[in-house]
Every structure is written in C-alpha cells, then in structure tokens.
Amino acid sequence: MKTTRDLHDLVGGLLMTAAGLFFALYGRAYDFGDTARMGPGYFPVALGWLLAVLGLMVAVPAWWRRGNAISVQWGNLFWCSLSLIVFALGLRFLGVALATFVAALLSLVPSSMNLRTRLTVCVVVSILTVAIFPFGLQMILPIWPWSI
Image 1 (cartoon, rainbow, N blue to C red):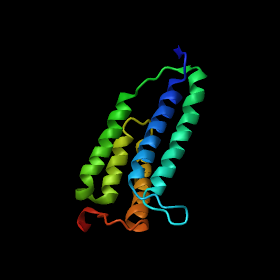
Image 2 (tube, one colour):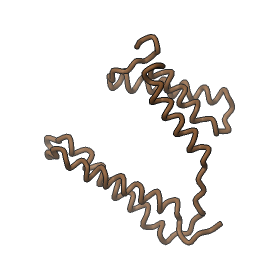
Image 3 (cartoon, rainbow, N blue to C red):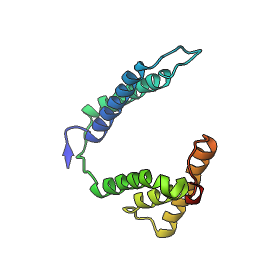
C-alpha cells in the first residue's frame, strides 16, 4: 500500500530531531565550558544539536519521497519492552551476566533464529556487557547472583 510520503523516514527523522533538541536544550542547564575545558553540558549539547541536524537530514527528503505505510509489529514491541523491564528488575538479583542473558533471550522470542543461534547471541551479548560495564568502565555492578 503506497502513501504519499515516506512515513518511516519522516517519523524517524522527526523523532531524532525531537530527541536531539531535548538533549541540546536540557544540557544547557549545566556548565558548557569551552573546547579546551569542556564542562558537563558540552557533550550533551553538542551531540544533541548534531542529532537534531541529522534527524532533519533524514526527515526533510522523506517529505517528498514515496514510501510504504507504517505497520507496527506489536509482538516485537511487547517482547522488547518486557526484556528491558526484566533486565531492570533482575539486575539486582541475577547480576549483570544473567540479567543480560535473560533479557537478550526474551528480546529474541519473536525471532526466527534457531535455539542454538539464540543462545550463542545471548552468551556473546552477556560477555560483552560484562566486559564493557563492570570491567571496562569499572561500574560497581554485581556480575553474578552470588557476588551481590
């Protein structure tokens, strides 16, 4: 079914622009600093404006381009949202490794991957999450349930 506009890119670009403007304007509440000594507001303001401009670069051409109608995949949205909620609630009790594994597994429920591939993806995502956050960024997070 054709529409008169490319609604996928139009809506996506406008959402990117809105998010960019939010961070650019909200970040101004913090000290901006300058290029030599960046304050806490420098990074969100700079990236917010960049995101807003990129969003406009996606949305404006989409206004004149033809595209397909938007179809929301409610099952994917449900499983993705549920995986985020389970991760947030399970982080304290399961630790980062298991909470990430369970969240990744839940988010892959609507996927057509076979079980072995799903489990491999979940293990790799868990390893990367543990490597980046507790080890790389040295965030104080329990890795396993018994390390709480």
